[in-house]
Length: 282
Ligand SMILES: Nc1ncnc2c1ncn2[C@@H]1O[C@H](COP(=O)(O)OP(=O)(O)OP(=O)(O)O)[C@@H](O)[C@H]1O
Image 1: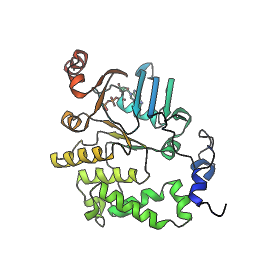
Image 2: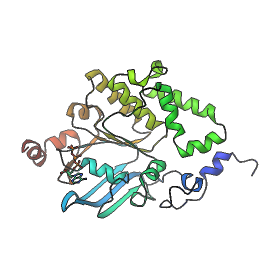
Image 3: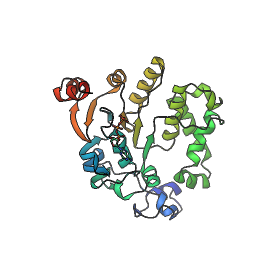
Image 4: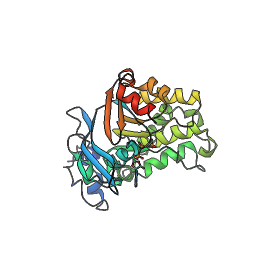
């Protein structure tokens, strides 16, 4: 026992009941990594969600490979936000299956548990702590993570500092570390919020309209950032800006009326008559 690193002991713990009580203490938060051994990061099958009889999702099936950067497009009301709500535990579907990796049944987890399992979600509007510096925002993200709190307890502050530096480089705000977050541009705030998610080292990142309101320069920088994150993380990007999608997309999924209408390269889906009809018909 004495030869073992404490962190190894923690992360090798047997799988706790993932559907267990979020307040159950460290037994709950010390989850082993998501099992990505079969190359699938996210698996949704036959998901349906109804709001007062209206089907926001209608037998939606979709899967993302590990490290993939998937763009999700579709007209207003297609069900994109609802799909992210299902993945993150905000909305429970009436039917269907949703797995994160091989073993984590997302439909049994609460929102905080989904985050702890390694799913980060970025909403459209940036929500950084405006009065804190860029660096403090990143540190705060780490401190709010229960896994990190466990490591803090064991004084791994050097590791944390290193992580902050790494993320500052990734989001290209290293020369802005001491700046008040409220004084950043809109795009920089978005990057900072993405950085706050990255502090928790999520396997899967869900990004909702990340370039809305950005300048062309910021949009290009965001494309570079996402391309650099792909491979290390699995990314699901919901976006209406087709120029941005063109810059980053490998595979594109088109949602319409709560189901997958088409899937393929951007060129393939844009050439699909059903897709053209859905967009032009509005
Ligand atoms: N809580 C709710 N109650 C009732 N209807 C809802 C609710 N949430 C979503 N809807 C409806 O479900 C459908 C899908 O909405 P959703 O927000 O998922 O679409 P979307 O593809 O994200 O659209 P947008 O591109 O406009 O953000 C819409 O018709 C919406 O009005």
